[in-house]
Each structure stands twice: as structure tokens, then as C-alpha cells.
Amino acid sequence: DVNIQETASGTTALLRAVNKKHVAIANALIAAGADPNPQMGSQGETAITLAALNRLDDIIVDLIAVNADLNATESKNGNTALLRACSI
Image 1: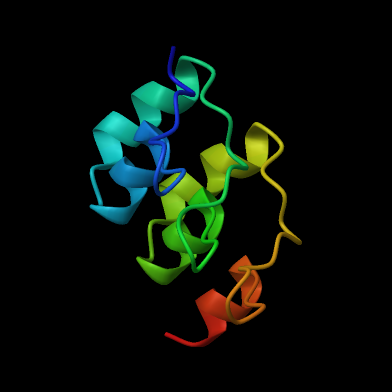
Image 2: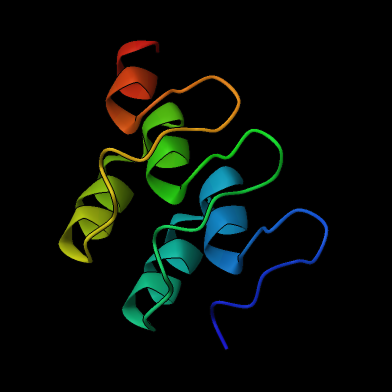
């Protein structure tokens, strides 16, 4: 199951791959149907906010194609993907 979440943090394989900048793994998980919208840990990052922060343009395009929530806000600071991209 590509959407299994770690109990403590809520991290999924897709969140971990994007956070660690493993583009090929992230692409494979997206192609396998990974949910693009879970939030990770106490900060509440999503795959698209992490991709924006890490400047992973190809991942952002792929996440948009599978309906990632562009308006999702991080729980700690309220950042969206757009705010993350602008803060770089």
C-alpha cells in the first residue's frame, strides 16, 4: 500500500521521497497512485509544499496532475505551496 502512514508522524513514502529530493522514487509513487495530500508531522507539510520548498518543478507538475491540493496550508505556519515557492 503506497499510502501507509507512519504512526507517529503521519509521513508517507511520497512525503519522505519529496522531502529527501528522491525525484525518481516520488515519480514512481505518484504513478502508483500515492495520495498527494496527506500532511506530515507537527508542521503539516504536504508533498506539494515540500516540492515547492525543494524546487522540484517536475514533481510539482506531477502532483498537480493528480489533484494535489494547491491551497492546503501547513498546520504550524499556514504556508501554502505558493508561499513556499515565493520564500525561496
